[in-house]
Length: 256
Image 1 (spheres, rainbow, N blue to C red):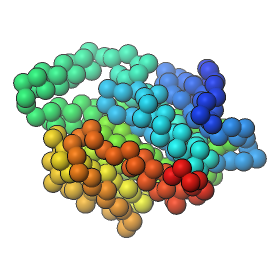
Image 2: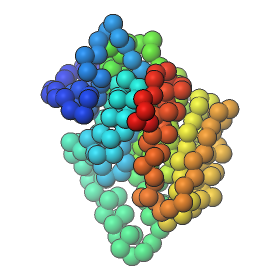
Image 3: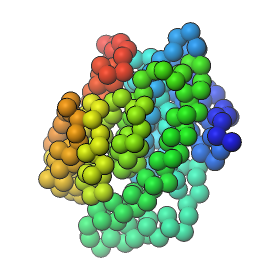
Image 4: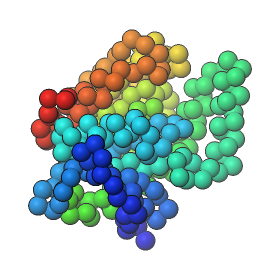
């Protein structure tokens, strides 16, 4: 019932792209060329942002860096109500309320926090099933290290997942409010890299700092960049590659 089925395969930019389904969960797995059981590699799970999908350019770009620089496997699944998954009436109501608040110049945070918390409840077991299925692949296996990389909604969904999933050994988070998430962050002790925008028009810097402070990790690094919410520098993706190379193992080529 929860087995993984590949539905399409292609190659580009030095990596193999395989679409898959696990029950009703659609996903994509990016891998190095000619990967197999004899050359197992670490796995990085990535969560996409709100309103986006598993193959959003940001996801493909980060995956290409991790595959090319480290030889890792990278997997993304569509969050509930996103990408190839249908929206529910609840999704439509929350999205309409978000657009209404945005048009009226009202704070978006309370709506985003509430909606993302709902999505996280649905997505957490889906990520656990996905990780189970991916680890059954001979090129990944059950004994290799696993990381998680997700910003914005990817943090809202990924942080609760990492808080209860002992197989995750390093994670990159950022750009979210501490409401709901701070208590769960206190349960996380693995190495963390955290990004925030100092001039974020939606998430006050005090809120971002509070979430970073909540992690119980002995090794945690804060990356604070000047700029608004959508102005996170591209070089933060390269920093994440180096972070995962340190903690999951693997080379970093000159492109990083």
